[in-house]
Length: 250
Image (cartoon, rainbow, N blue to C red):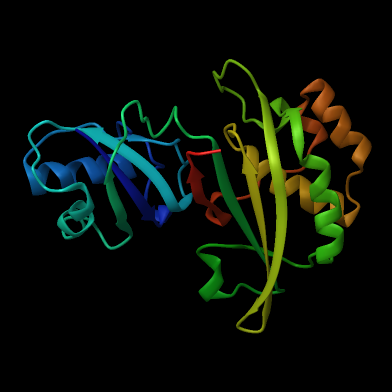
C-alpha cells in the first residue's frame, strides 16, 4: 500500500528535507519515527526538497509498505508521539494507483514573509525577514506581475543545480499585507508548476529591489534572456520561506 502524509515543520533546526550524511534532516527524523513506532525501515519521498532552514505548512510525502496495518488516516496520531514538537503530521490517506508525491504534483505554492521594522521583533524573526522599509503593497504587486508567466528562471537558480531545464511557469505572484504586534507584515505567495533551487528566495530579493528602484525592469528582462545571476537582487534568507501547499489536480 502507498501511504500518503501531509506534514508541517519548522525547518530552523534541520538541514532541509533530504537526508544528509552529517546533519539532521526532516526526512531522516520522520523515517526514524516510522521505524520506532511501526518497526519498519522505509524511505519517504516528498513532493520536493526544502532547503536548510525552510519551513513547510503543507508538504506532501509518501512511502510504501505491505506489512503496516495502521489505517492511513490514523498514522498522524500514531507517529506524532514519536516526532519532535517542530514536526507534525497533519493528514494521512491511501495513495491512488500511480500516485507519486513528487511526480504527480501539478502546482506548488510558496510563501515568503517580510516585516518592516528598524529593530528585530523576536516574535516574528523565526519565520520572517526584517526590512527597514518596504514599498507600498500596490508597488510590490505591480512588480510581482512581471515575474508571472513562463520564463527561463536560470538566473534565479543557485549554481550547481543539475536540472534538465530551467524553464518554469509561475501562475501567480500575490502579495498580502497585515499588521502583527503593531508591525507591518507582507507575504509574497508564489504559485508555479515547479521551482528551482533558491528560486523563490531570489524572486523575493528581486521584488524588493525592483519595487524600491534599486534595479529596473530592463535588468529583469535581461536576466530572463541571458540567465545571468548578477543581473538580479540577492537571495533572501531561508527562514522567511514556507512551502504553503502542493496541488495534485488541475
